Image (cartoon, rainbow, N blue to C red; front, side):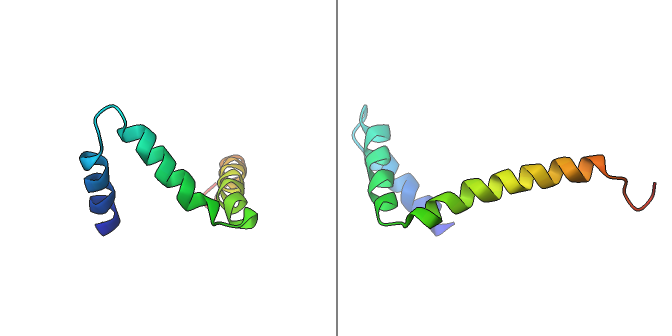
Length: 64
């Protein structure tokens, strides 16, 4: 929860009218150092979870 408080304080101290732009730039800079593999793991994992959820909805469970 410490990161949430830190990010909220940074956001709150930003200039009105520029807070979201400044946050976007900070996030963009922090993402630049990541490898292409790391950037694609999260979306791939999300798609895999959705597909697994659909499959588990369609197959019968242990009580059926």
